[in-house]
Image 1 (cartoon, protein in one colour):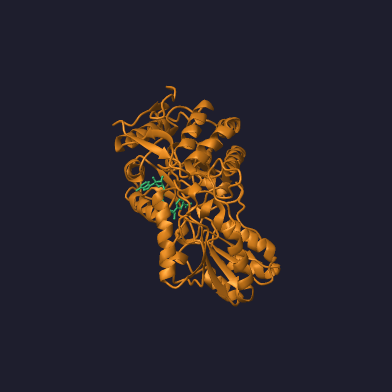
Image 2 (tube, rainbow, N blue to C red):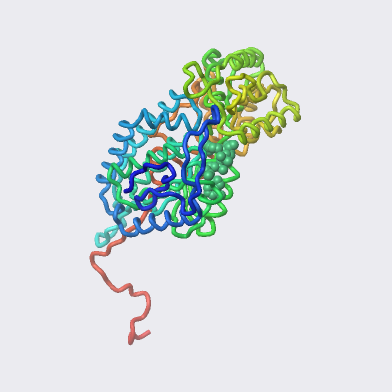
Length: 501
Ligand code: TXE
């Protein structure tokens, strides 16, 4: 492997680090102040096709798929060790690309390591299943085999974490893959692919393509040599990918975000509920697929809850990666900042009442960055665009409910179904509501935690398939039934030649 001494040589195809075939590069700029973070290669269609070829050849050769489960799990455990060794450097890279606080990036890297460790253990539990077909002459067995060549396409909000949910199970399963992180946040993907090679993965198993979705990403979803596409990103791109992959009938897994109801009943522990409501929507400036962007609050506590959230929102200190007092950071890009602003404008035009925020920060310390003020919109209804679509910014919409049934009905009145939360001291009521909400994760008297052992993914337009947990590994496996007759005999169905009728 050539050394990665120039960041322009940041595509990895068949274990070789190289520049884009036409020499194109992209400048990665800090969302905090616009400063240059690094320059990386911007892949062409040809580069993507070369990465697909490398992955296909490596998979078909069996160079990795033929390793035992134990060997592959050992490799994944080594990846976790090396991530731990480089954790500090990786957290700085993530923080620089995304603009998030260093401490958040450090939490992310710790989570990434636990994902690799979890799958390194889980892979050891996969075994064939014997099927009793009621005939002693027949051995019938269900085996699990790698799905093949995988395209792993990720977003910019949790770049390495989202990559880890795909890469760790892909490696354990014995797949070869092409990782395509968001063009805005490539640094930690580069680091991860270096580590996977250092851990001992054969060349061609882990390939890296950087660049724009329409150019570098699209071929990964269209090429017949790709067997499986796992995508995390926006709904519009998800639909495009679903259409592209249908041409070659690929297996797909999609995580497309959510409009997540955060339901507070009057009997809840309000101090805890309010504090979690603030974190749920303003953490990482709302750039979280499971952000609690829709507050559904029981009428009798509306004023108290909302006034306290507004007070807390006004006090949030925004700052860049190096600001130790920062509680949240900038949005990812100018285009995204403008999009969030448009959602607030549309809500106001549709009758929402702005209680705080609603615009780009005017703080001089934020002048060169993409900071949007924590925003609370009251008087919202499910008809409003801002309630139905992801602004993916620090924007909380408030709706009122009167009954349990209305809370459930409002919580389900969305095309999405990723996550939600219920706050109530009445455990039976909370459980009834949790079960009635059509979302992939429900927190009761809590908000946000997830674990590698538990599945993550959405109902309805939030996606297809699950990441994490055993299901997150099974996405990368094909199931095969092998029927062995130990005492072969003619089938006797058709007449043999010369046999009388
Ligand atoms: O994401 P895209 P964008 C939501 C959020 C945000 C919106 C748009 O609402 O405002 O998506 O964000 C690659 N073929 N989420 O435009 O386009 C692209 O290069 C193949 C929710 O940044 O979905 C990147 O690597 N790949 C989300 C990845 O898709 C293509 C997290 C995601 O980009 C492609 C982030 C194509 N035709 C945003 N077009 C979540 N679910 O957590 C783009 N890409």
